[in-house]
Length: 411
Ligand code: SF4
Image (cartoon, rainbow, N blue to C red; front, top):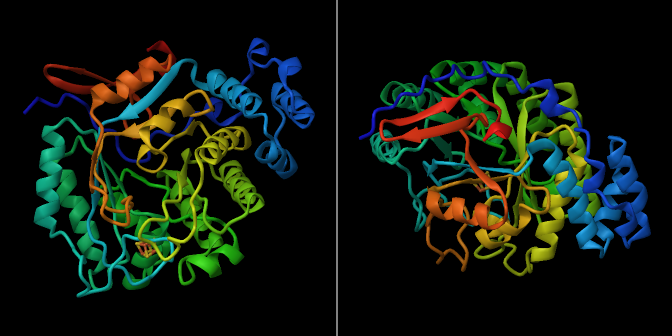
Protein backbone atom coordinates (compact mmCIF):
# COMPACT_ATOMS: atom_id res chain seq x y z
CA UNK A 1 0.00 0.00 0.00
CA UNK A 2 1.50 3.40 -0.94
CA UNK A 3 2.32 5.90 1.78
CA UNK A 4 -0.16 8.75 1.79
CA UNK A 5 1.53 12.08 2.04
CA UNK A 6 -1.43 14.34 1.52
CA UNK A 7 -2.39 16.65 4.35
CA UNK A 8 -6.15 16.49 4.74
CA UNK A 9 -8.06 19.74 4.69
CA UNK A 10 -10.76 20.25 7.27
CA UNK A 11 -14.13 20.10 5.55
CA UNK A 12 -15.52 23.42 4.52
CA UNK A 13 -12.40 25.45 5.13
CA UNK A 14 -11.72 26.22 1.48
CA UNK A 15 -14.34 28.53 0.04
CA UNK A 16 -14.75 29.02 -3.68
CA UNK A 17 -12.60 31.98 -4.80
CA UNK A 18 -14.69 34.93 -5.99
CA UNK A 19 -12.91 34.83 -9.35
CA UNK A 20 -14.33 31.39 -10.03
CA UNK A 21 -17.88 32.58 -9.42
CA UNK A 22 -17.99 35.57 -11.77
CA UNK A 23 -18.27 35.30 -15.54
CA UNK A 24 -14.78 35.38 -17.05
CA UNK A 25 -13.49 37.66 -19.82
CA UNK A 26 -13.98 35.92 -23.14
CA UNK A 27 -11.20 35.84 -25.70
CA UNK A 28 -12.71 37.75 -28.66
CA UNK A 29 -10.97 35.34 -31.03
CA UNK A 30 -12.92 32.44 -29.49
CA UNK A 31 -16.31 33.76 -30.67
CA UNK A 32 -16.75 34.28 -34.38
CA UNK A 33 -20.05 36.14 -34.38
CA UNK A 34 -20.11 36.35 -38.18
CA UNK A 35 -19.92 32.56 -38.44
CA UNK A 36 -23.13 32.10 -36.42
CA UNK A 37 -25.82 30.89 -38.81
CA UNK A 38 -28.81 31.18 -36.47
CA UNK A 39 -29.62 34.92 -36.22
CA UNK A 40 -31.26 34.35 -32.82
CA UNK A 41 -27.90 33.32 -31.41
CA UNK A 42 -26.05 36.46 -32.50
CA UNK A 43 -27.40 38.75 -29.75
CA UNK A 44 -26.74 35.98 -27.24
CA UNK A 45 -23.14 35.79 -28.42
CA UNK A 46 -22.80 39.52 -27.95
CA UNK A 47 -24.20 39.28 -24.42
CA UNK A 48 -21.72 36.53 -23.59
CA UNK A 49 -18.89 38.66 -24.95
CA UNK A 50 -20.05 41.55 -22.74
CA UNK A 51 -20.23 39.13 -19.75
CA UNK A 52 -23.96 39.78 -19.40
CA UNK A 53 -26.24 37.26 -17.77
CA UNK A 54 -28.50 35.20 -20.06
CA UNK A 55 -32.28 35.28 -19.52
CA UNK A 56 -34.71 32.37 -19.77
CA UNK A 57 -35.58 33.44 -23.34
CA UNK A 58 -31.90 33.18 -24.28
CA UNK A 59 -31.80 29.68 -22.84
CA UNK A 60 -34.84 28.71 -24.92
CA UNK A 61 -33.24 30.10 -28.09
CA UNK A 62 -30.18 27.99 -27.35
CA UNK A 63 -32.33 24.87 -26.91
CA UNK A 64 -34.36 25.54 -30.04
CA UNK A 65 -31.45 26.24 -32.36
CA UNK A 66 -30.34 23.81 -35.04
CA UNK A 67 -27.00 25.60 -35.15
CA UNK A 68 -25.28 23.15 -32.80
CA UNK A 69 -21.81 24.25 -33.89
CA UNK A 70 -22.45 27.84 -32.81
CA UNK A 71 -23.92 26.67 -29.51
CA UNK A 72 -20.77 24.63 -28.98
CA UNK A 73 -18.56 27.56 -29.92
CA UNK A 74 -20.22 29.80 -27.32
CA UNK A 75 -20.09 27.22 -24.53
CA UNK A 76 -16.53 26.44 -25.46
CA UNK A 77 -15.49 30.10 -25.32
CA UNK A 78 -16.75 30.29 -21.73
CA UNK A 79 -15.14 26.96 -20.83
CA UNK A 80 -11.76 28.01 -22.28
CA UNK A 81 -11.89 31.36 -20.48
CA UNK A 82 -12.43 29.56 -17.17
CA UNK A 83 -10.20 26.53 -17.52
CA UNK A 84 -8.00 26.86 -20.58
CA UNK A 85 -7.22 23.43 -22.05
CA UNK A 86 -7.48 21.67 -18.67
CA UNK A 87 -9.94 18.79 -18.30
CA UNK A 88 -10.42 17.33 -14.85
CA UNK A 89 -11.00 13.82 -13.56
CA UNK A 90 -10.72 12.20 -10.16
CA UNK A 91 -10.00 8.81 -8.66
CA UNK A 92 -13.00 7.94 -6.58
CA UNK A 93 -15.19 5.12 -5.42
CA UNK A 94 -18.99 5.20 -5.23
CA UNK A 95 -20.67 3.30 -2.41
CA UNK A 96 -24.46 2.93 -2.56
CA UNK A 97 -24.96 1.59 0.95
CA UNK A 98 -28.55 0.41 0.47
CA UNK A 99 -31.28 0.46 -2.16
CA UNK A 100 -34.08 0.09 0.39
CA UNK A 101 -36.12 3.27 0.18
CA UNK A 102 -39.35 4.55 1.65
CA UNK A 103 -40.14 6.41 -1.59
CA UNK A 104 -41.00 5.17 -5.08
CA UNK A 105 -39.90 7.80 -7.60
CA UNK A 106 -41.12 6.73 -11.03
CA UNK A 107 -37.80 7.30 -12.76
CA UNK A 108 -35.91 5.18 -10.21
CA UNK A 109 -34.87 1.65 -11.10
CA UNK A 110 -32.64 1.46 -8.04
CA UNK A 111 -35.07 1.41 -5.09
CA UNK A 112 -36.53 -1.72 -3.51
CA UNK A 113 -38.85 -2.30 -0.58
CA UNK A 114 -37.85 -4.35 2.45
CA UNK A 115 -38.01 -8.06 1.59
CA UNK A 116 -38.35 -7.44 -2.14
CA UNK A 117 -36.11 -9.37 -4.51
CA UNK A 118 -32.91 -7.43 -5.08
CA UNK A 119 -33.16 -5.36 -1.88
CA UNK A 120 -29.78 -5.02 -0.17
CA UNK A 121 -28.00 -3.10 2.54
CA UNK A 122 -24.30 -3.08 3.39
CA UNK A 123 -23.18 -3.40 6.96
CA UNK A 124 -20.77 -0.80 8.27
CA UNK A 125 -18.04 -3.48 8.17
CA UNK A 126 -18.71 -4.11 4.48
CA UNK A 127 -18.45 -0.38 3.81
CA UNK A 128 -15.14 -0.22 5.71
CA UNK A 129 -13.83 -3.06 3.57
CA UNK A 130 -14.81 -1.24 0.37
CA UNK A 131 -13.15 1.91 1.71
CA UNK A 132 -9.98 -0.07 2.44
CA UNK A 133 -9.89 -1.32 -1.16
CA UNK A 134 -10.54 2.20 -2.46
CA UNK A 135 -7.69 3.63 -0.37
CA UNK A 136 -5.35 0.85 -1.53
CA UNK A 137 -6.30 1.64 -5.13
CA UNK A 138 -5.35 5.30 -4.62
CA UNK A 139 -8.82 6.85 -4.42
CA UNK A 140 -9.03 10.37 -3.04
CA UNK A 141 -12.80 10.39 -2.51
CA UNK A 142 -15.65 8.18 -1.32
CA UNK A 143 -19.02 9.13 -2.80
CA UNK A 144 -21.62 7.62 -0.48
CA UNK A 145 -25.38 7.80 -1.16
CA UNK A 146 -28.33 5.45 -0.81
CA UNK A 147 -32.11 5.18 -0.55
CA UNK A 148 -34.14 6.59 2.35
CA UNK A 149 -33.65 3.64 4.64
CA UNK A 150 -36.69 3.09 6.86
CA UNK A 151 -35.06 1.86 10.07
CA UNK A 152 -31.40 2.86 10.24
CA UNK A 153 -31.11 5.54 12.97
CA UNK A 154 -29.28 8.82 12.36
CA UNK A 155 -26.39 7.81 14.61
CA UNK A 156 -25.64 4.92 12.20
CA UNK A 157 -24.66 7.53 9.59
CA UNK A 158 -22.63 9.75 11.92
CA UNK A 159 -20.88 6.69 13.33
CA UNK A 160 -20.14 5.48 9.80
CA UNK A 161 -18.47 8.77 8.92
CA UNK A 162 -16.53 8.88 12.20
CA UNK A 163 -15.14 5.39 11.62
CA UNK A 164 -14.30 6.11 7.99
CA UNK A 165 -12.53 9.32 8.93
CA UNK A 166 -10.48 7.55 11.61
CA UNK A 167 -9.66 4.66 9.31
CA UNK A 168 -8.83 6.73 6.23
CA UNK A 169 -8.25 10.38 7.17
CA UNK A 170 -6.93 11.10 3.67
CA UNK A 171 -10.18 10.14 1.92
CA UNK A 172 -12.65 12.96 1.27
CA UNK A 173 -16.16 11.92 2.29
CA UNK A 174 -18.68 13.28 -0.20
CA UNK A 175 -21.89 11.90 1.17
CA UNK A 176 -25.68 12.10 1.24
CA UNK A 177 -27.98 14.02 -1.07
CA UNK A 178 -30.33 16.73 0.18
CA UNK A 179 -33.09 14.09 0.09
CA UNK A 180 -31.17 11.95 2.58
CA UNK A 181 -30.39 15.01 4.73
CA UNK A 182 -34.13 15.79 4.87
CA UNK A 183 -34.79 12.16 5.82
CA UNK A 184 -32.15 12.31 8.59
CA UNK A 185 -33.78 15.48 9.98
CA UNK A 186 -37.13 13.71 10.16
CA UNK A 187 -35.86 10.49 11.77
CA UNK A 188 -33.65 12.33 14.27
CA UNK A 189 -36.11 15.17 15.02
CA UNK A 190 -33.21 17.58 14.51
CA UNK A 191 -33.23 20.62 12.25
CA UNK A 192 -31.48 20.41 8.87
CA UNK A 193 -28.78 22.71 10.24
CA UNK A 194 -28.24 20.46 13.27
CA UNK A 195 -28.04 17.39 11.03
CA UNK A 196 -25.45 19.03 8.78
CA UNK A 197 -23.40 20.24 11.75
CA UNK A 198 -23.42 16.72 13.23
CA UNK A 199 -22.40 15.16 9.90
CA UNK A 200 -19.67 17.73 9.39
CA UNK A 201 -18.29 17.06 12.86
CA UNK A 202 -18.36 13.34 12.07
CA UNK A 203 -16.31 13.79 8.90
CA UNK A 204 -18.55 14.94 6.07
CA UNK A 205 -16.37 16.77 3.54
CA UNK A 206 -18.94 17.87 0.97
CA UNK A 207 -22.34 16.94 -0.44
CA UNK A 208 -23.18 15.49 -3.85
CA UNK A 209 -25.86 17.15 -5.95
CA UNK A 210 -28.38 14.34 -6.37
CA UNK A 211 -32.09 14.49 -5.68
CA UNK A 212 -32.69 17.84 -7.37
CA UNK A 213 -34.39 16.18 -10.39
CA UNK A 214 -36.37 19.10 -11.93
CA UNK A 215 -37.41 22.08 -9.81
CA UNK A 216 -41.04 22.22 -10.86
CA UNK A 217 -44.17 21.24 -8.95
CA UNK A 218 -45.89 19.78 -12.04
CA UNK A 219 -42.95 17.48 -12.73
CA UNK A 220 -42.57 16.73 -9.02
CA UNK A 221 -46.17 15.58 -8.68
CA UNK A 222 -46.05 13.55 -11.89
CA UNK A 223 -42.80 11.70 -11.31
CA UNK A 224 -41.45 11.93 -7.77
CA UNK A 225 -44.36 12.84 -5.56
CA UNK A 226 -43.52 12.39 -1.89
CA UNK A 227 -39.98 13.61 -2.38
CA UNK A 228 -38.65 16.88 -1.02
CA UNK A 229 -39.82 19.79 -3.18
CA UNK A 230 -37.47 22.24 -4.83
CA UNK A 231 -37.63 24.86 -2.07
CA UNK A 232 -36.55 22.22 0.45
CA UNK A 233 -33.67 21.00 -1.75
CA UNK A 234 -32.45 24.56 -2.29
CA UNK A 235 -32.77 25.42 1.41
CA UNK A 236 -30.68 22.41 2.42
CA UNK A 237 -27.92 23.34 -0.01
CA UNK A 238 -28.08 26.95 1.16
CA UNK A 239 -27.67 25.80 4.76
CA UNK A 240 -24.74 23.58 3.74
CA UNK A 241 -23.06 26.51 1.99
CA UNK A 242 -23.62 28.73 5.03
CA UNK A 243 -21.86 26.08 7.12
CA UNK A 244 -18.91 26.03 4.72
CA UNK A 245 -19.85 22.69 3.17
CA UNK A 246 -19.37 22.78 -0.57
CA UNK A 247 -21.93 20.97 -2.67
CA UNK A 248 -22.68 20.01 -6.26
CA UNK A 249 -25.92 20.39 -8.21
CA UNK A 250 -27.73 18.16 -10.69
CA UNK A 251 -30.67 18.19 -13.07
CA UNK A 252 -32.25 14.93 -14.21
CA UNK A 253 -33.47 15.69 -17.72
CA UNK A 254 -35.13 13.84 -20.56
CA UNK A 255 -38.31 12.41 -18.99
CA UNK A 256 -41.56 14.38 -18.64
CA UNK A 257 -40.15 17.87 -18.17
CA UNK A 258 -40.17 20.62 -20.79
CA UNK A 259 -37.14 22.52 -21.96
CA UNK A 260 -38.52 25.63 -20.30
CA UNK A 261 -38.72 23.77 -16.98
CA UNK A 262 -35.07 22.82 -17.39
CA UNK A 263 -34.10 26.45 -17.95
CA UNK A 264 -36.09 27.54 -14.89
CA UNK A 265 -34.25 24.88 -12.88
CA UNK A 266 -30.87 26.26 -13.96
CA UNK A 267 -31.95 29.80 -13.09
CA UNK A 268 -32.98 28.72 -9.57
CA UNK A 269 -29.54 27.17 -9.09
CA UNK A 270 -27.87 30.34 -10.38
CA UNK A 271 -29.91 32.47 -7.98
CA UNK A 272 -28.93 30.32 -5.00
CA UNK A 273 -25.27 30.50 -6.03
CA UNK A 274 -25.60 34.32 -6.03
CA UNK A 275 -27.19 34.32 -2.55
CA UNK A 276 -25.11 31.65 -0.88
CA UNK A 277 -22.15 30.49 -2.99
CA UNK A 278 -20.96 26.94 -2.48
CA UNK A 279 -21.85 24.98 -5.61
CA UNK A 280 -18.76 23.61 -7.28
CA UNK A 281 -20.28 22.10 -10.37
CA UNK A 282 -23.45 21.25 -12.24
CA UNK A 283 -23.89 17.65 -13.33
CA UNK A 284 -26.68 17.32 -15.91
CA UNK A 285 -27.91 13.72 -15.58
CA UNK A 286 -29.32 12.16 -18.72
CA UNK A 287 -32.41 10.11 -17.82
CA UNK A 288 -32.02 6.36 -18.44
CA UNK A 289 -35.54 4.87 -18.81
CA UNK A 290 -34.52 1.18 -18.71
CA UNK A 291 -36.20 -0.71 -15.89
CA UNK A 292 -38.04 2.30 -14.43
CA UNK A 293 -41.78 3.03 -14.34
CA UNK A 294 -41.05 5.46 -17.20
CA UNK A 295 -39.47 2.79 -19.42
CA UNK A 296 -41.96 3.66 -22.16
CA UNK A 297 -40.22 7.02 -22.65
CA UNK A 298 -37.42 7.20 -25.20
CA UNK A 299 -34.93 9.14 -23.05
CA UNK A 300 -32.75 11.97 -24.34
CA UNK A 301 -30.88 11.75 -27.64
CA UNK A 302 -27.17 12.43 -28.00
CA UNK A 303 -27.93 15.84 -29.47
CA UNK A 304 -30.12 16.72 -26.49
CA UNK A 305 -27.36 15.57 -24.14
CA UNK A 306 -24.84 17.84 -25.84
CA UNK A 307 -27.26 20.78 -25.81
CA UNK A 308 -28.04 20.30 -22.11
CA UNK A 309 -24.35 20.32 -21.20
CA UNK A 310 -23.53 23.35 -23.35
CA UNK A 311 -26.55 25.33 -22.15
CA UNK A 312 -25.70 24.55 -18.53
CA UNK A 313 -22.28 26.10 -19.14
CA UNK A 314 -23.84 29.23 -20.65
CA UNK A 315 -26.72 29.75 -18.21
CA UNK A 316 -24.73 29.02 -15.04
CA UNK A 317 -22.30 31.92 -15.32
CA UNK A 318 -21.48 31.68 -11.60
CA UNK A 319 -20.71 27.94 -11.51
CA UNK A 320 -17.02 27.07 -11.73
CA UNK A 321 -17.43 23.62 -13.37
CA UNK A 322 -19.65 21.57 -15.68
CA UNK A 323 -19.30 17.83 -15.34
CA UNK A 324 -20.33 15.14 -17.80
CA UNK A 325 -21.18 12.01 -15.81
CA UNK A 326 -20.10 9.23 -18.17
CA UNK A 327 -22.33 6.65 -16.44
CA UNK A 328 -25.32 8.58 -17.83
CA UNK A 329 -23.98 10.27 -20.95
CA UNK A 330 -21.58 7.45 -21.94
CA UNK A 331 -17.85 7.99 -22.08
CA UNK A 332 -17.87 8.52 -25.84
CA UNK A 333 -20.30 11.43 -25.66
CA UNK A 334 -18.58 12.77 -22.55
CA UNK A 335 -15.35 12.94 -24.53
CA UNK A 336 -17.09 14.93 -27.29
CA UNK A 337 -18.68 17.21 -24.68
CA UNK A 338 -15.22 18.54 -23.75
CA UNK A 339 -15.72 20.72 -26.84
CA UNK A 340 -19.20 21.80 -25.69
CA UNK A 341 -18.49 23.51 -22.38
CA UNK A 342 -17.61 20.52 -20.18
CA UNK A 343 -14.39 20.65 -18.14
CA UNK A 344 -14.78 17.60 -15.86
CA UNK A 345 -15.27 13.90 -16.67
CA UNK A 346 -15.81 12.78 -13.04
CA UNK A 347 -13.98 9.71 -11.93
CA UNK A 348 -13.14 6.06 -11.96
CA UNK A 349 -16.38 5.25 -10.01
CA UNK A 350 -15.73 1.44 -9.96
CA UNK A 351 -19.18 0.32 -8.83
CA UNK A 352 -22.48 2.10 -9.40
CA UNK A 353 -25.83 0.60 -8.43
CA UNK A 354 -28.20 3.46 -9.12
CA UNK A 355 -28.48 3.47 -12.89
CA UNK A 356 -28.15 0.29 -14.87
CA UNK A 357 -28.88 0.16 -18.56
CA UNK A 358 -30.68 -2.75 -20.22
CA UNK A 359 -33.52 -2.83 -17.69
CA UNK A 360 -31.35 -3.57 -14.71
CA UNK A 361 -29.39 -6.25 -16.53
CA UNK A 362 -26.56 -3.81 -17.15
CA UNK A 363 -23.40 -4.33 -15.23
CA UNK A 364 -23.17 -2.57 -11.87
CA UNK A 365 -19.40 -2.75 -12.09
CA UNK A 366 -18.78 0.41 -14.02
CA UNK A 367 -15.14 1.35 -13.89
CA UNK A 368 -12.97 3.63 -15.94
CA UNK A 369 -9.24 3.32 -15.61
CA UNK A 370 -7.19 6.48 -15.15
CA UNK A 371 -5.23 5.57 -18.28
CA UNK A 372 -8.41 5.46 -20.32
CA UNK A 373 -9.79 8.74 -18.97
CA UNK A 374 -6.47 10.46 -19.67
CA UNK A 375 -6.25 8.93 -23.16
CA UNK A 376 -9.72 10.22 -24.06
CA UNK A 377 -8.93 13.71 -22.75
CA UNK A 378 -5.62 13.91 -24.62
CA UNK A 379 -7.21 12.63 -27.82
CA UNK A 380 -9.80 15.42 -27.56
CA UNK A 381 -6.98 17.99 -27.37
CA UNK A 382 -7.03 18.76 -23.65
CA UNK A 383 -4.65 18.45 -20.70
CA UNK A 384 -5.78 15.84 -18.17
CA UNK A 385 -5.54 17.06 -14.58
CA UNK A 386 -6.37 14.85 -11.65
CA UNK A 387 -8.28 16.83 -9.04
CA UNK A 388 -9.48 16.14 -5.54
CA UNK A 389 -13.12 16.66 -4.56
CA UNK A 390 -12.49 20.40 -4.00
CA UNK A 391 -10.91 20.76 -7.47
CA UNK A 392 -7.37 21.04 -6.18
CA UNK A 393 -4.69 19.48 -8.33
CA UNK A 394 -3.36 16.05 -7.30
CA UNK A 395 0.13 14.81 -7.98
CA UNK A 396 1.23 11.20 -7.63
CA UNK A 397 4.52 9.42 -7.35
CA UNK A 398 5.69 6.07 -6.04
CA UNK A 399 5.12 7.20 -2.45
CA UNK A 400 1.49 8.19 -2.87
CA UNK A 401 -0.56 11.26 -3.79
CA UNK A 402 -0.63 14.84 -2.58
CA UNK A 403 -2.57 18.05 -3.19
CA UNK A 404 -0.54 20.59 -5.14
CA UNK A 405 -1.12 24.22 -4.32
CA UNK A 406 -0.96 25.62 -7.80
CA UNK A 407 -3.73 26.74 -10.08
CA UNK A 408 -4.88 24.11 -12.53
CA UNK A 409 -3.91 26.43 -15.38
CA UNK A 410 -0.28 25.79 -14.38
CA UNK A 411 -0.69 22.13 -15.22
S1 SF4 B 1 -34.71 8.36 -6.47
FE1 SF4 B 1 -33.91 8.21 -4.37
S2 SF4 B 1 -35.66 8.80 -3.08
FE2 SF4 B 1 -36.52 8.28 -5.10
S3 SF4 B 1 -37.07 6.10 -4.96
FE3 SF4 B 1 -34.99 6.21 -5.82
S4 SF4 B 1 -33.63 5.98 -4.05
FE4 SF4 B 1 -35.67 6.53 -3.25
